[in-house]
Length: 201
Image (cartoon, rainbow, N blue to C red; front, side, top):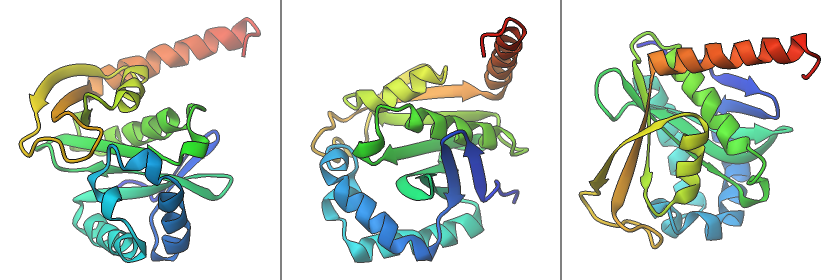
């Protein structure tokens, strides 16, 4: 099965495949982000060094099987969050997920990281759509999807109900098709050319 690149870069953000040697950095990032994560991430309520180690080990295995491609979000070599491409929405689809250390939020970095993931996802031969799923109460995740030009296509009741304290148990599903992404990229490229032509870049 085709694999994505292990390192992806865009401006201030670099995504790189998780390594077992990231244990200390990731454990620290999670600990410092707990107030930010616990309302939305069910795993955060039971986090700890062993759980982090298990996550990194699982990431290595899931990368090999093509189930999930997990990345550290880094800026200036510091681990500032986590994201990934996940094959769990059927043939031709990838779901993306992401979280960022609260110190680094509000700077557009989550949106940049998500855009890098989407671009890489559509470079895989068998992918025709990318989706973002989040509880409707998590407005921040929805804002990232909206900024990237995703379309909210459905709201569904989560089968297990709310899984974290901030959730209400209704999931929003946002979708971007390969054709939509190509059109958006072409539009942005044209705008960039115009800015350069008129000295605006």
